[in-house]
Length: 93
Image (tube, rainbow, N blue to C red; front, side):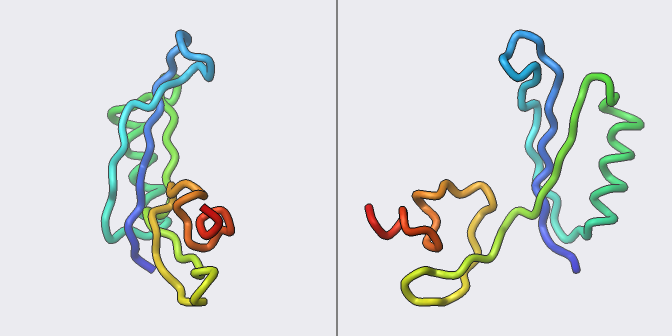
């Protein structure tokens, strides 16, 4: 199934507490899981050496159920819990 994915590229940086920093964020459209894995391998091979960069990707949108109406809606995967209509925190504010 093709969908949009968000790829995060982190660069090693010992000045930070986690020893890495966000280097780039890119949205890839109409890809499948295997296609994204191939992209990661190609990028590591030609542009971003594994010794200096880490890559992760996830679907751009996720489907949740609205707590009040029961309807399913799509929201960005990185939506904070306070802004997510499927959480009680959203409705209690």
